[in-house]
Image 1 (spheres, one colour):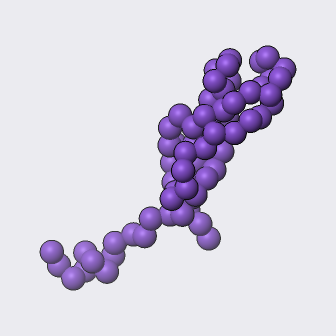
Image 2 (tube, helix red, strand yellow):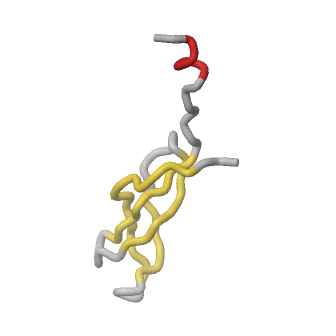
Length: 67
């Protein structure tokens, strides 16, 4: 490995964009969380059933560059 490869290596971003999905209706939305945090599970209003519902993180979409 050359020294230039070590110096040019990118740092990982601190934030990632994730897809959240309702456990009840399947409604989805996108949110941002820290890379090192646990997977998200939150209560949020679901417009399909017009009540609060549990949303679980389904997958990572992309990294977010922090400024």
